[in-house]
Image (cartoon, rainbow, N blue to C red; front, side, top):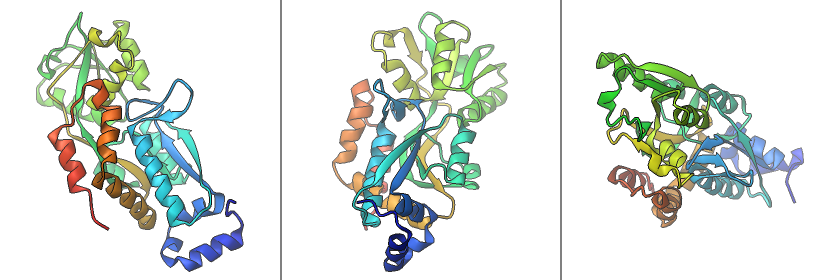
Length: 286
């Protein structure tokens, strides 16, 4: 039975005083619904699968967080609602306004974003790279001069691409897109010579179609360092603690290696020493 009656919510929060300081947990307790924001085309971290369901590495981690929320609130049942979000501004706004309780996509932690939202423990580490067609390859990030590169507006990749071009005095021409799918489509159609995004996302884009994977080339040297985490409401330390406890528990066990193999290993991406160290360092004891 879902605990939605106000009297039950008040009783619950009175019994667990720490949770009373959390607007996110209070809202979840009142509605019995945990709302997860996700990016529908950021495979293998978060995407909409062929059956129309939310899926991916970040989604699986957030399902562990949902279980922890259910236990922390002592709910009999907890429904999960997935909310598709695209542009970075839309994702930030959804967390700020409470449209979603947590954003489980592929979001880089930055100080400017932390002015608006909080972040959980890190969930992944990657770096920006350039995807090109083997028939018109960009073999290295040093070969970007005079190239037309697609990038999603408002992302950290846009910032580092512009900074790299400026520092190295390269005349990189930027074409803005709204989604990863649009960036790859422009690349396939020959309208751009490269698509810039985080390496983790590029892996998911090209290996979703195994037959087409050999048609692409990805730069090995990264343009940037991109630490990912889940976005939560700024200042809601009690909810963030529940989420961090859930993530730390996953990192302490064998689940995280299985998750990595499911979403990255099967694409031929070995577990890097940097990501392995991140899991180890964040396996915080209770």
